Amino acid sequence: MDAGIFLTIKDLMKLLGSNNYSSCANQHKVIRDCIATGKKKLTIKEYCDYEKIEFDVVWKFIRG
Image 1 (cartoon, rainbow, N blue to C red):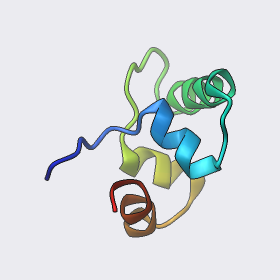
Image 2: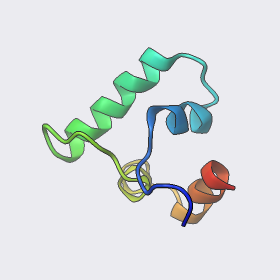
Image 3: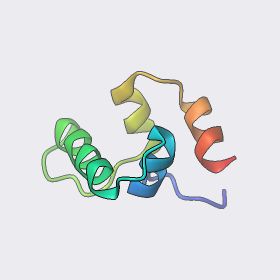
């Protein structure tokens, strides 16, 4: 695997089609806080579980 398993803010921007870094950073933090308070990283799997979307689709979109 050439890419990490963590969802970065730039990955989230790509998924949402957004150019606003701070808005996506806030959303990234909200999701992390909902999963576990104080968590510093968010995996793609955790994001997919939170948003109830298929992992394979997201993985291919981000990494493909």
